Length: 502
Image (cartoon, rainbow, N blue to C red):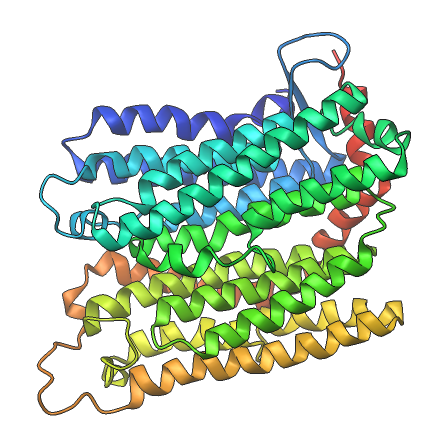
């Protein structure tokens, strides 16, 4: 069997399942079974692609047989197949959590039946963005996941969700418009949007025009990745969504933007003049994000600010431009997708058990030991406590920065260490207030996991367990990440696409 035929499966299978779950609109239990099974299958196919790409290099499929590089091309190299694998694992677990109350907020007549079809379309968009071999197909992937996210973020149509969702929609439409403008400019200047052909043609352009194109694309992807100063929309948008939706948004959607920045910097602009600018942005994203987190009294908003902050670590590795920096950044992306998703899922359980996510209203949750462990493990991981993967990823990034021996890189190291310490303070503050402070004598809320379906507890435990597993497999995963970094810097991507031309 030609492995190239497996490349579109992570896109096509969820789209097919979305149609099936729409037919099963009156049977939510069957919808959940179809969604979970589909995403589990996608994870299996993604693992096969991951192993194949590692063994034989990028796997390319031209959709259609148009000559001269026209048409849609999908590429599964080490980086994209790894991202599809991690995203499918996360979505397969998270899809277990939505309940009627969760997605409708008890609003009568809310379109609960559309959750699973929309969620599956979202996963198809994410996979398409990771596998896209040209700018326009990347745009299509972004639009698929964005239109799906519009529906998911406003399910239930509560006032708070509509207000936050409106901000999200406006910002997303603006970024999409800028993306179209950038694609038009690139095509007008080079005559192509293919990642395989663009490096050579962009290099032949006037340096000023190259810089304009790079800055425009950086703004577009920066909005989607929520880097400074384009991050203000995120903390107001994510916390209002249902717990399962927020978990996927926090874990995946910003990483698609980071992935796009990585592709742009390594493939389209390998000799970028913006290295120092990216380092400054990385430093400010880390510091301002975590300072915002420390000022929050609500757990979801606090975690949303830490999400922004830790995007700075990923951007740091990209800005360094070295194989060590890129490899460390890839490792950290994988770590952060899993840990951030786990934390938001656990916070969803805390809200169900404690009745709130406000630190002023929570307390006494230490009486539920399993819930305490489920929060503490990924929280310490996010804070960079050894031997967890967060510590390993940050050490790798700091080593890569120190190897450059520049003052700005040294400043980035100081900012990274400070951000890690402040992150630990933020998550321990949640631990102290939500789990250890007294509830008050007049608090009659029930603190017990018995209020949760058993499958939720099992799934959350599995997700937290995977974050611990990252420490166990850190060696092989780090090696894979560095091989992926060599791929995206060494031209293997371009060569593979050109050799596969029909």
